Length: 353
Ligand code: BDR
Ligand code: CA
Image (tube, rainbow, N blue to C red; front, side):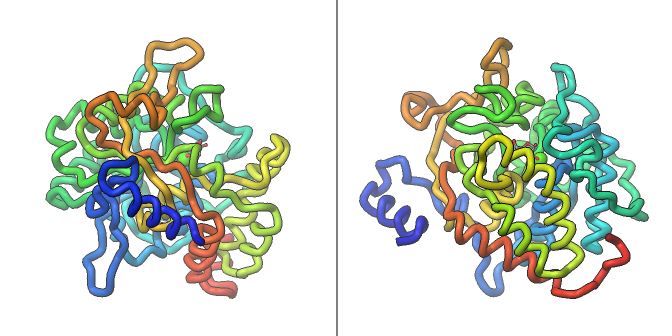
């Protein structure tokens, strides 16, 4: 029985009383033939797995990407912005890119070169992109897009939440204008940057807490699930063998993160951000639970922990968020490979890489 079938069974048994009693209409945006494309805003700190997430986003027919914003995180802002533009060029996309925050709201900046390399793309050098970043700041651009979409915009955020915190501080009506928010960050269990905190939340805990408190349902694609969304060394090689420029780039830029993960005894490289994007597109291969979530912002060893446990948080109100806890890895891999195959199997765009 697949994970999705198992989940369906449990949901049937639990009825609407149990932890699976999620309002599917709110979270399911699986496209049916003829259905309008879902407007999406993508906020990222490109980063090797952000780069793969971008490659997938552009192949998802059910999405219409309205804009992309960058934030400091895996590497400094000028690099995350440059990387985003360079990956956009590799795709051949002209979706506008907006520069966001260069540092967290309150705490000192933290980066992750040990995972993403000094340039943020695992040492892979992409040509200088001809695309230019837009003049409008990320938080203003996000708000304008949300207004334009009249409450239909889904925000996918896979970096520190600084841009979102700034947008929420500046535009009080933003929460009413967002349909939902899907993030990669946090987890109900432990962290990956400290024993308590996941990287994206640790980098800007205060901004993340603003998001969980703003009234919009947030789906937390955290480490509970994303650590299971990995590719082994052999699977990455298989991906590269698809032959397209984009698939070869994906294989190559993930090599240093793969080596880092293997050195920690993990079975492969976790594709955190791609998993969040695929959840937003179709949640049928995932398991998720309603939850109350706050972020620990007082400092000390638990600074940046997403406080929820899918147990005692049932006593808390409101429980409007979702914690994604599981993924069917085989089907995740199949989706990822299918989407990447759309880039073809030859040398299209090979001058770019
Ligand atoms: C998250 O942190 C970053 O290093 C990755 O891009 C991902 O968004 C994983 O903890
Ligand atoms: Ca990221």
